[in-house]
Image 1 (tube, one colour):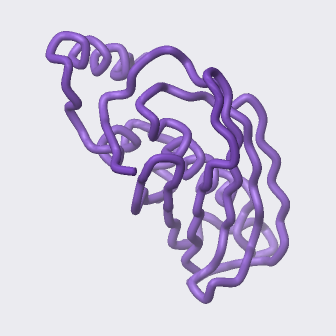
Image 2: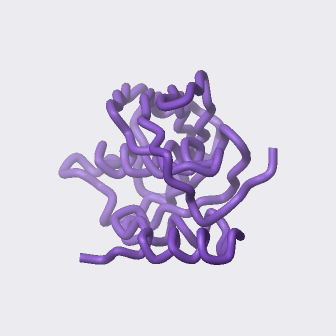
Length: 155
C-alpha cells in the first residue's frame, strides 16, 4: 500500500513549504488518473476537471457509465475541498443524472463550495458537456482533518 501522503506531510513539516501543485498531488488519485480525469483549475473553494468520453467509459447501452461521471465529479470535489490547505474526505455524496452523454463528448465538472466550517464542508458539482448542457448534479459533504496538504492555491 502506498503512503505518499505521509511522505508529503513529513516534507511539509520539515521544510514548512509547499512542494507540489494541486494537479501533481491529485495525480496520486490513481483511480481518477487511470479513468482519464484531468484537473484543469483549482482555487479556494472551487475546481474544474474534465473527462473525454472514450469507449472504455461506456455502459452496455453505449452511454457514459454513471461511475465515470461520479469519478469526474468526485475528483473535482476533492480538489475544491482540499483547496484550503487541509486534507478533506467525503462523508456523503449524491448524484442526479439529468441527460445522457456518450462517445465523443467531453464532460466538465465544476465544484463550488457552499459552506465551510472548522471540520466540515458542503459542495455542489455541476457536470456539463462541451456545449454547456447540464448532464448531472453532484452534492457532497466532507470532513476536514487537521492535516496539511502539500500544495497551496490562490483565492
